[in-house]
Length: 184
Image (cartoon, rainbow, N blue to C red; front, side, top):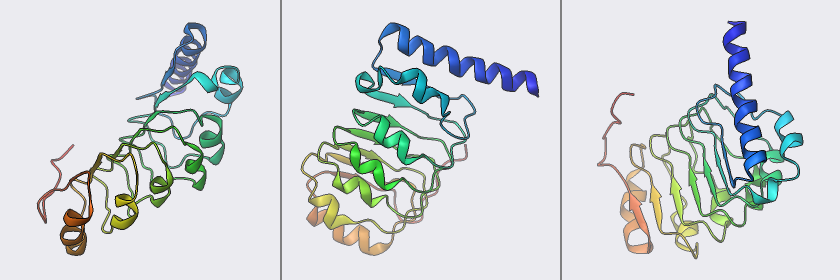
């Protein structure tokens, strides 16, 4: 078990070093078995955080993200967090003023993360396969750049299904009422 942990830590370190050395705008830590964002990464990336525009933390075991994560990587354009155990976002997500796309699919959200409705550049929100019942349709309708919200395979209430279509000017993807996600 210790050997596997050591390999996972080495893999994360390698990926972080590649980002720093190559001057890449992408940090890809997908499928690294992370339960939290490693604190040491902030120090290693301190001189390049402004140039990182895409972070992928998909298919890990994250239960939460810290406010420090949001404020450190405030230049993000895309954030991929699908396939974790997230159920909420920190309020500091509102510092991601340049964010265009966020993927929160296959997590454990019961409430729509309303902080996202304050992001002026946000074009795409993916919340497929969560447990969301209610959606702030009016706030979403007021978002200037929003083009797509994916809410497939969420137990949306009937009110959302009826109210949303006439109010929105973006694509809202919903499954038929009662539809279940295919087994993973």
